[in-house]
Amino acid sequence: MNSGSTVFSQLIDFLPTQQFSKCVARYNGDWRVRTFTCWDQFLCLSFAQLTYRESLRDIVSCLRAMGSRLYHAGIRGHLSHSTLADANEKRDWRIYADFAAILITRARALYRQESFGVDLAHTAYVFDSTTIDLCLSLFPWAQFRRRKSAVKLHTLLDLRGNIPCFIRITSGRVNDITSLDDLPVESGAFYIMDRGYIDFGRLHKFTQVAAFFILRAKRGLDYSWRESTPVDKASGLRSDQKIILCGPKTSQLYPDSLRRISYYAEDIDTHFVFLTNNFFLPALTIAQLYRCRWQVELFFKWIKQYLRIKAFYGTSPNAVKTQIWIAICIYVLVAIAKKELKIERSLGEILQILSIALFEKISLLQVLTSNDLKNEMNAPSNQLELFNF
Image (cartoon, rainbow, N blue to C red; front, top):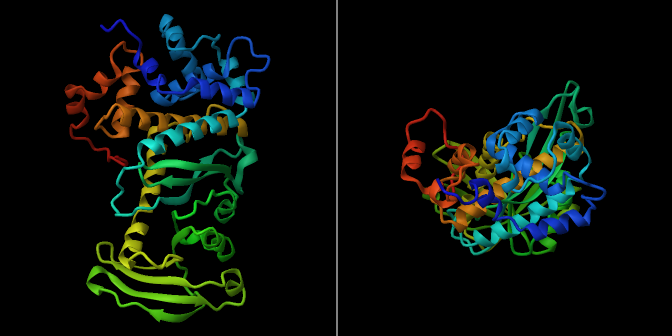
């Protein structure tokens, strides 16, 4: 047996601890804390994410069973159910949100050359949201409908590496369109969205900062045709038009020209109509970019399957946001380790392996590249693979 550090410790070594300390200091996270620091809390909840723990008592019982290995894993504070519960309730969730932003910046740098299936020199993002259902009696602050509570994750996904670079957590009642107000818009980048984000006043801000949007048009759009470009109908394209909005409100909210592209996807027998403010990319490339929007749906399915964000360890808004942000930290951390160690496995396989080998004293690279494990993971299974880099 390897007498070195555990797999968990080796994984945590990829984290910039000095940057974490700065995040803690920014919000006075360890003020008047004697034994159980923010770092201890982060490691405990990271363990819970990596090993699929069900509750606080489950987390505490499993960690206490580790004995001396707990200290060497970096968890130095006194661990108890009440201590961890209090930390989740009181430690500012923004500590972990800021730390996730640091990890995201690092991951995006590693994946900036990653291909996503479309030959595009610009950065391309997909923006969408997913709803996480909650119990109304336990989470009354997040009431969504009459008998239901929920929170929404508004997510901007970088298609190069499928890295979430912006996340906003709100109550389920918040309209998706309003999240566009907080979206960081980058000049020259492409933003791919569904028809639920059509708000011409907000979309015009993209044009004003020289950013590009691609989204599906709603039926009944009032517009006037200006000119058309010939298209190859064998490729699925049906029309490529330059239009201007004619509605009494929409024409004022978006006074500039728009590009309207009609496309028929034969494989799914569906007709699409796209709106974009980009006039120089080929129409077929616009259609291919919109097809990439499905990546954000796969991302949502992936994190709900492999991370603990559907059942929560606390009921307050702070506890819910803390757990979600630490889950995002773990997702990005594993993506960083995968890239830096040049692991060929999918993120789902890596998390499955880590869940059973976290406190083994073996090389992280060895445990993730073992042929025996690889053959076992590739064995026939009735579970579909939802996400793969």
